Image (tube, rainbow, N blue to C red; front, side):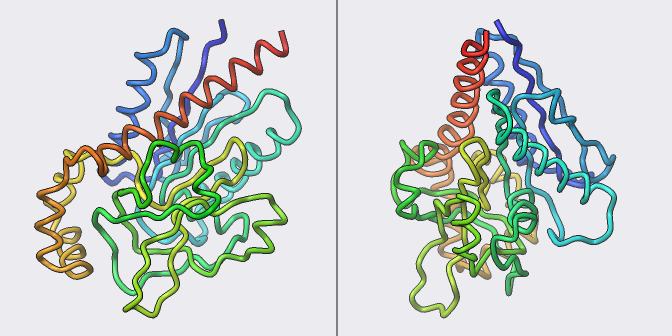
Length: 277
């Protein structure tokens, strides 16, 4: 039986982060539930300049993180671009696939790397639990299968992906599977919220790993609390806190997207191993 190796890429640049804690918890729960021998290794990409060797791992989850997703001249930026290329090219050239999930900051970096559209600063920092709408392609997306439309997820970002280059998406065979909520009273383009980059690579602008406890913890931060009140109003803020642990909102999203990604990755990796045996 094949051992599975998971690499977790910490993109938080030495800032304490609830999201990465949640990613570890989901990965460890998957590890415990699996009959296979699964190892998990953490790489501190931005602060310690650590990067996994693509050959050595089967599954990668790359976290969100603070700051500007455009290049600022750090060593890790080229390493991360090379990492994205390595996973993508490996999957084009090999039967045994590598699986990669990109969250928030990592999603923005990948979208810039593959030149998919305009990743720009938002007018104001966005934080809260927001409805995410499936696109037509999103209706067919395996990771969204058990989620309603819209489904709810934690949004935490200073940047956004707007004005997708549809020709470029078509050229690379990538698909937009979710966008932000429709706001007819606001004359702004709706941001891209999730992309199926390939059969093995998926990314979300939102935080599928977030749970109610982490969200409550984040709301203790005045910046997050104020951003939410500024964007949605005090009434919405209080309602969100009240509905934080509703079974059909972020609890459902957390239970579905990343766990389904891990299970699907495992199933395909083990199938590939059997096929090559």
